[in-house]
Figure 1 (spheres, rainbow, N blue to C red):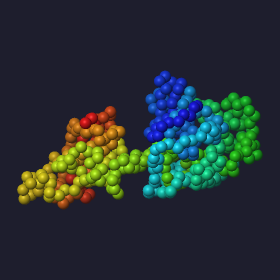
Figure 2 (cartoon, rainbow, N blue to C red):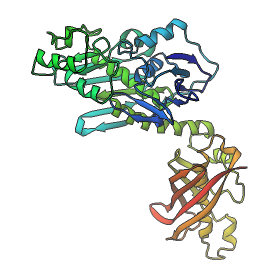
Figure 3 (tube, rainbow, N blue to C red):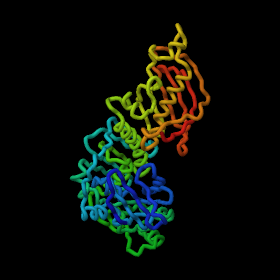
Figure 4 (tube, rainbow, N blue to C red):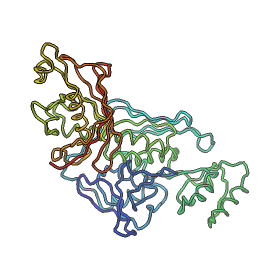
Length: 435
């Protein structure tokens, strides 16, 4: 495995040099394909297993851009911690890059839980990245353990980087049969005894794994009485895994993560929620001009429409690639009220559909890198229903959800409300084209 510097905004890329064409996969949660005892990334032919310890090294050293070349499908396991990677990086040094660093700042608490497994993850606002982690195993060698990381710069290298992975004796054989832990041994994992068979079970598993080293039950509950590097090394390693998995957000974050009994499955699920928030904030940072998510000035940067055909006043929410919520204030000054109808003004249904389509256009344009250089062509409108008239003084709220996106053709389902009353609904098909 070779670490190479990368330019600003490059992110972390794993490159498989052993495969034809040197395919690569970017380290973000959108490319996670497996979480069986580790985090696996894949993009086409490029697949890399067990990336969390390498990513934890990058997260702990606050590295944002890196090319990781591998001549195998998995990083070398080292001693089961992040320390071997950290040592190599610190040996050559880290450079500050001439680019602004964008942090995902957590404004309101967000959470993920699995009640059936008593797993909980909560992220609360904080000025810096913090982690508080608790594990609770019904095993004398582990019991309840707790750790807290308050300052990456001051604590990561000495207090967390060298915490080794751990597993239970009862898990080892199944992991081997599943094709995992191929380089695993007593030199790179803390193995916890959890059997009632004593040395007989240890010998059986040692033989099944073809381990050359001696293995015995030990008095501490750890195979071979291997000494821990910290009194609570297992929970510190859990915090290390969490650091690596949350780097898959695609950006550093400021927030306090409180974790109880969390593993890769829950970590990645939380990372997905945080990445959605990151995408939203990244778009808002690019276009927002005030307190609103997208006010009219931001809309004018994206949309090609102008008076009298710009029908959207504000975007109040946008989940990239998923949904958008927009507002249209309907006033008597609208040009169409002069003829529709004199003395009985009603907003034409076709104009409601046009406004809804423009809201969908904003959602669709944010799927491309440079939306200001593209335009949306609508190809079909189906299942349109007009349920209530829209009058001057009403405020229309459009809610559109992306149903599918293939290449540059999109299907969306839209609804329009006045207050809580559904007034119009329709299905749209559209495509993004160059201007």
